[in-house]
Every structure is written in C-alpha cells, then in structure tokens.
Length: 276
Ligand code: DGL
Image (tube, rainbow, N blue to C red):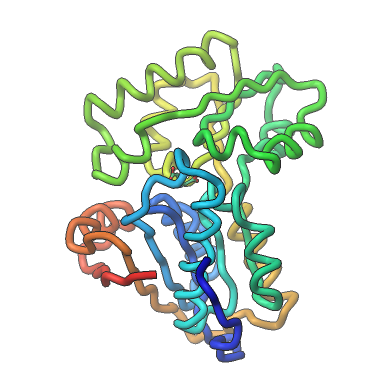
C-alpha cells in the first residue's frame, strides 16, 4: 500500500482544499463548494485512469484514495473532500486513521434529506454497487429510514457515459430508463442521486422522472459541511477572492479536458496529467 507522509501541508488558510473522485463526478461537489466558498483555492483530482471505482473492490478503492490524498497533501491541501460516494463508503474512515490531523469531508447518499422531503415515504436511491452494498450505507439506512420504504438501484455503465461526455445521447437515456423503471413502478416521490456523477445530468433524470418526483443530491450540504469544518479549524480563506482552481487527471488529460470544460462551463479550463 502507498506510504503517505502527513507533513507536506503548509499551515494557513490560503492553502487549497483538495477534492477527488474517480473522474469528473466530484466536480458537482466542487461547484457547490465554489458557490459557498468562492475565496478558497481548490485542487481537483480526477482519478480517470482508475475509473470507475464503483465496480471495484473496497480494498482497491482504499489504495487509490490514499494515493490520491497523498498527491493532494503534497500540493499543500489543508483539507480533502472525498467527492465520491463509492470512495467515501470504502475509504473515508481509513483515510482519517491513515492521515490523522488532516480534515476529511466525505459524501453519502442524501437519505436524511429524503426522509424530510418525502410525503409518501417512498424513496429511491441510485448509486454504484460499491456504495449500495457497503456498511456505511446500511448504517445510514438503519438510522434514517424508519417508517420509509427505500428502494435501491445499483446502476452500471452510467459513470462511463458521463466520463465520455455522453450526457444526452441514446445510450445514456436507455441506461437511465432501465434503472429508473423499477423505482417509478414502486411509486417513489423522492429520488436520491447517490453518486456524484449523476447530478451532471440531473435535469435529464428529473425530466424522465416527471414533475411529481423530487430529485436530490448532496452537493450543497457537503459544501456547507466543508465551510463549517474550515471555520471550526480556523482555516477559512479570508480572500481576496476568487480563489484559483487547478485540475489534474491520472488519465489522458487532453481527452478529459473537454468534459471538464463542459461541466464547469469554462472554455478556458486546463487539465494537467498527474500520476498518484
Ligand atoms: N462519482 C463516484 C461516486 O459518487 C464514483 C462512481 C464510480 O467511479 O463508479 O460513487
């Protein structure tokens, strides 16, 4: 397993916040953080060479999470957002144990929010199989789903379509229709997007669900939690903003760049290749 030294971080609020995901999905969390924390400098690492995480073993994802966190730490990250449900499921506690003293913020499917929002108490959760069969997710359901019918649907192939920039094509639509059908048949009124890639196409998912179903994700709550943690540890960047964002990919950075540009709506955005 990768050895990571926890001593590269220069103290101080101007240090960047690191974000990582198996690919472009964590950008949906970074976007929410950017709205709430516009003065923060940010590093984004897309582990594209090892995408997807959700169909791999928890051990493999833990190894990747530690290696990528090491990369972000070497670049001076003062905190790391594990902007991926699969990696949070498999590796969040392991990262906290492995790198004590570094602030980690994770994500989880928005079951708590769904419990508040659902009127008929029938909710659906879309996610990767790694997330949906994990212990963290089971505990989340044990603690926050009493009185609710929760229908989970592991989705195969959608992350790869989003990585390829196929946000609106026929193959993406047919994956969505196939995976939404069983949930819609159960009469859910709230759909949780339990993978950070899915909010990239949230409007399309909502259109397929129809107006009676609320589609939710955790970008905003995670960004607010990051803000609380930075405030509590005296690490909030006082500015002046806006902070800069540097993007890295472990895969083919030239191929990844157009997809990142499309999601961030920034035609000038550049992506550097980095190994971790
Ligand atoms: N965006 C990720 C998640 O939230 C990763 C999906 C994958 O790589 O399979 O689970």
